[in-house]
Image 1 (spheres, rainbow, N blue to C red):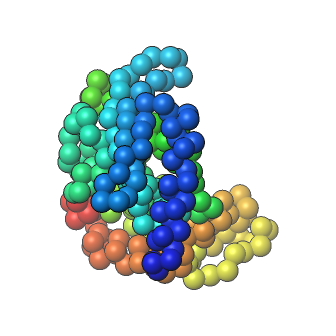
Image 2: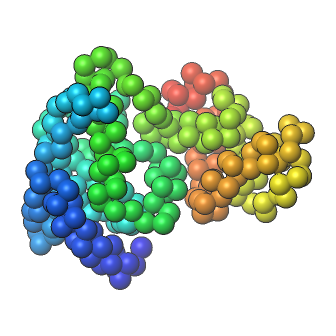
Length: 234
């Protein structure tokens, strides 16, 4: 990413700080090395009004914003800082798998929207696991396994790695079919009744990105069973 784009992303981030403070008064703007960021407390309250507790977090600009999520650090030390709890090696929160994040951010996001739609559900899920021992919204695994699960879920291919990669490659390299054509998956179903929705969603990803993910999954999986797949991906 060019320097100009990085500066524009940071300015966009800074310009969105005031609306966050207005909606979330427990946040404040802080500064480190001349760069502004948000820090504060975020209460997790479910639809029934139950308060699941409060997290101290920092929300910082990240390269690519607003077309990527900002970087979040949970600073109250409630979440174990390990991959099994969806935490990256640098201590930041893994909110979603990368292809899903790219699609969600395709038209740009706001920090307020990110807190409402991504960060709060992520922290609720973490709190639920702390209290109940498991995630209420299981989501995807951490790392490359999660990326594979994302694509296989969208394409409804289950544990069939070869079919998942074949369909991903088709989406990356072939034009969109007519709605009334037979689907490219070989099911003999009409495209509109089969993989049209998945094609349209995954086609929002850059061709080069899709091909890179295919290569990563292919080489890391060895095209083996799911148990071996998980072992190779972690």
